Image 1 (tube, rainbow, N blue to C red):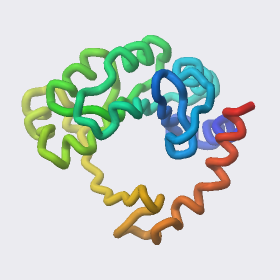
Image 2: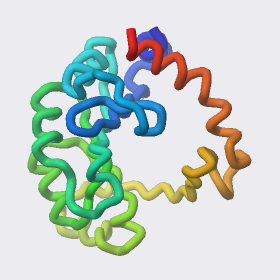
Image 3: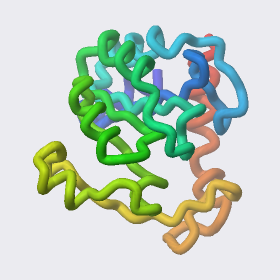
Image 4: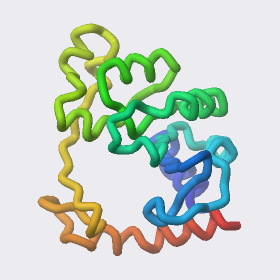
Length: 174
């Protein structure tokens, strides 16, 4: 109900993140399994009108080992809307592979901050659009589920989101 209401109110501006491990959607900060298959869940979100999915393979996130291409390819085949890869990008070559697999974007974190990904080079060499290349610097303190250095005090953001996260978890369990 929450996703459908959000899509009704904001349309294409709604993106849904799918965090998964071994094909299972994970919840509660990646700690708990939902029992839901990642591809089935992606199809359900698309059926509700979601046009952008952000997929994170938890096993690859922050590891600088490359994105989970097999899972991303399966996800690309399962849905028609925009698909953004999150986690595992370790090089400009990974960005090329994601583009060639038909993905619409990538969230690059650790690889950008360590210098392993060279965004100006990616733009210069033409495998990343300068319009789509955006850097949004955030200093996240995930241990406290808050934003440090921002408008929220540590823990405040997490508390504000709890009712929504609980509702999503209940909907997924149903």
